Amino acid sequence: MVDKLGDWVRTHTCGDLRGAQIGQNVLLLGWVHRVRDLGHLVFVDVRDRYGLTQIVVDGEHLRDRAKHLRAEFVIGVKGRVRARAPEALNPKMPTGEVEVQAVEIKTLSEARVPPFVIADEVTANDDLRLKYRYLDLRRPALQANLGLRHRVTLAVRKYFDAQRFWEIETPVLTKSTPEGARDYLVPSRVHPGEFYALPQSPQIFKQILMIAGTDRYFQIVKCFRDEDLRADRQPEFTQIDVEMSFATRELVFAAIEPLMRDIFQVIGRDIATPFARMSYADAIARYGSDKPDLRVGMAIADLSGGFADSTFSVFRDAVAGGGVVRGLVVPGAASYSRKQLDDLSAQAREMGAGGLVWARRSGDVVQSSALKAAGADAIAAVLAEAGAGATDLLLMAAGPAEATSKVLGALRLDIAKREGWLKPDEYAFVWVVDFPLLEWDGEEKRWVAMHHPFTSPIEAHMDRMEQEPGQVLAQAYDLVLNGSEIGGGSIRIHDNALQQRMFRLLGISDEDAKLRFGFFLEALEYGTPPHGGIALGLDRIVAILAGESSIRDVIAFPKTAQAVDLMSTAPTPVSLAQLRELRLKTDA
Ligand code: ASP
Image (cartoon, rainbow, N blue to C red):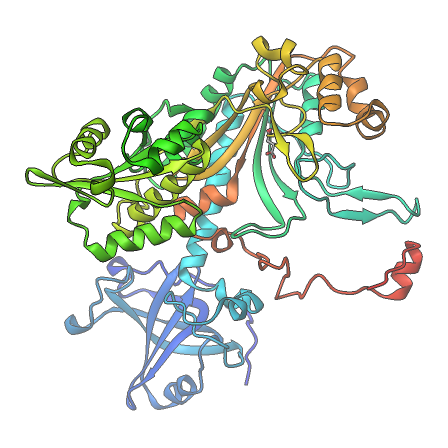
């Protein structure tokens, strides 16, 4: 039987009551978390966003009522706050000093038996949790994540407001502005056969806002990319999008570092600024990645010199063939067992390395998988060159420079993870700078923009774009935190002629450029301030702050890796009538 709410108004939330309220009459509203029936007494834990309060029910009439309550019923309780018996105090609960002795109980709505228990230890599988997202979201951990996300966006807005940025909305129904992924398209009913695209980012609009004189823009904005989903990506995600007129890279960094400081203040953490910086070339060579995790050291060292004339033909030939020998010192790992070393070699081979050579000291002797081939002196010399101490292990691989660093970089991360060296509450920021402007797309056989086509080359390289496209560096930067790219941006091209040269380099004909970007190229001709900006991934940042490994856990209604919303079941077929109205046919 369900009761009417009537004039019941809550006096407190389920997280409010403390010793100070003992003796007060209160009214609580919330969900039944748990019912414990002791026969003469029934305990009901009632829960809401703010916490959990224990209700005690005695007295025959009320007890019967309480015995009919089930998990997730919504109830109202009038009662009096009293101290718990000393043996019942629960210091782990903020309300653990008190309980409410019920005087009257209302059942405001009943609930079906939930498909999983609402508790922080998740036992249900992911698909079930997503289907019943409203139940999953009742878990305190997810409630806390939503609250954290709210506080972060609030901090972002406060920060930018204080810095005289304006939040300006850009359209969702727009023209395709490619960022390298596929667009989501929306058919136009009024213009049959024509389509809007959902923005992959507000890139062109924010640049046009600079031309429009708005000077400093930000927006917390949904972006859409129709990618084959890689791990932990969402087809729609949220960016903190930023653009500044008269910006230099330094000005952008100077705007973003204090923003990150404010964001981390939300969880009470002081982060150190300015952030470290590293060139893209260095990141690839020394960490095998353009998003190095700098919570651990273990930089990759070039050891090619020691093997140019070596008796160890594998390494000598690699160097002679234009390749490199590179090594990684793993601190304290000299004690690894034979099996651990074999596993590492197998892992390296799986990742495409020809092989992995290890070396270490054992007292005065050196040991190495290449001891016979290379000789003890050479191994001792290379251990010294790499800076390996008495208890360290040196891992070496040879081959083409980038591929070799990538293998060692992946081993570095794996080992660091396994050894527990990557602490989730330690934050290592680094700006990766000096990206190449272009990269060669082997499949399409053309140059593609490494960041996007609106990124400016560095001034000193502007004349060489056509002659040496592969050598040109961009005024682009990524912000990396603990091995995740949390943001990326650039100083933009603000000159029409340069923008057109860029399109030509990318194999976009002048006609095509006019068709796709004509409005933007024209805008560039009406007095464009030099400008630049960045976009930060809000979902990833909040996930890191929350200590969650997946961005799904900080998004209220995420989609699966197949881009499906399991709760609403989107995407779904639409009626023929709808298609006809849009003059669309499908052959699905
Ligand atoms: N629009 C870029 C992106 O979404 C960011 C930027 O260059 O500001 O990655």
